[in-house]
Each structure stands twice: as structure tokens, then as C-alpha cells.
Amino acid sequence: MIFRVLVLLLSLTFSGETDLSTSKLVFSDEFNQGMLDLNSWSYDLGDGCPSLCGWGNNEWQVYAKSNVITVNNQLVISATKHVDNYYSGRITTKDKFEFTYGTIEVKAQLPKGKGLWPAIWMLGHDIDSNTWPACGEIDIMEYVGKSPGEIHTTLHTPESYGQSFNTQITSIDSIEEGFHVYKTKWDASQIEFYIDNLLVYSFSPKIKNDKTWPFNKPFYIILNLAIGGNFGGSEVDDTIFPQDFVIDYVKVYQ
Image 1 (tube, rainbow, N blue to C red):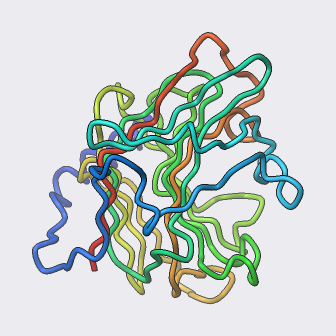
Image 2 (cartoon, one colour):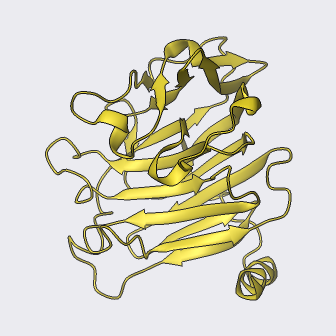
């Protein structure tokens, strides 16, 4: 805990706000069209079967279009339970918007409750031919409802497969309250993660190859709210439903 607090204090002292004045806004969705922009996003639907049942993590939810709406100029991904089934939503920019290097910002408010697992993340565009984890994964924000006040930022690579040692857990009191900005700066030398403009984790392996650095190609964006599973946990509090993962905007600068 002391280490995490020191990281945040040092970030506040030295990082400040990221200067985007010299960058170009290349993607922006403020969810103000009254419906999901299908020129930018696609739905992932179902339970992942037959190719990836439980979406690879033994998750409990079925993804449905009805659990993804835009309202009041915000994207709302809802986790619900009907009888014995859990439902939620997942959208992706795969094959519609992908980028190599830049800064991505997502302003979001987290849901609360044991068993929930909202995430803002990216996958390498070549995942269909270069399967995970060789394609690479950038986890901008993961939150696990069973561990309040903690945000996970992680890089998945072939070298870290099964161990996920390229990761940081940042403790922030009341992170569940209100909106917060989750930002990742990515270039050819390093990947940095920020929460409300505080630098919380930096990844820059000394040796960069296919095993340690599959991050030199286009990636696409994923927003989802999972329920249960290997990371979300084996216990789900059924009294919490419905719960909403609310995204105010997604912006990418280069």
C-alpha cells in the first residue's frame, strides 16, 4: 500500500497533465447521436460459444444488444439478471477503427458490486491469425467489484502468458464515485497508464521482440462489462442488479 501511495504522489508531482496540444484528434465518440454509431462500433453477442465459451475466462454473462444503449449523451452498458441468466454488453471497434501509437482517453463511471468486471482494453488487429496472447493485449482499465478501490492496468504478451507480471494495481479511495479519466499513452518505446492524469504505470522492456513487445501494429478498442469468471470471481451478489458501466466519451489522439 505504501508503494502505491508513493507512486501516486510522485506522479502528481512530476507528470502533471498530458499535453495533447500538438496531437491530432483521430477518433472521438461522445455518444450524442441517440444510438450506437455502427460506423465506429460493432456488438459482440452471446456467450462466446462455440469458439470461445465464457469468452475465454469462464464468464457468466450473455452479451445482448439491449444491454448497450446511449442516453443523455453517454454510453450505458448494463449488467442485468433475468431468472437464472446474466446479461450484459460488449462493443468493439474491430475492423472499423484501429490505430498504432497514440493517446487514448476514456471518461467513465464504474458499476459496483461483487462479481462485476468492467474493462476498457485493446487487442492486436491480427488476433484472427495471430492468436492471443501473441496478438498482444493492452488493459487500460479493469475493475473487479469484489476488490473495491482498486484499478488494474496490465499488458499481456507471450512472455507473460499465464503470469501477467506486466501489471499494476492502483488503490484509489472511492474510485467508484463519479467519473474518472483512464488514459494510455503508447509509442514505439513505452506504454504509460494514467488515472485522472496521474501516471500509475509505465511499461518499457529493454529487449523488444515478438515475445515482449507485440505492440508495434494496429490495435482496436473494446468496452465491456463481464460478470463472474476467472477474474471477476466465483461469487456474484445477485442483489446488486441492475448495474451500469457508463462511458462519457472515448477519444484517441496521434
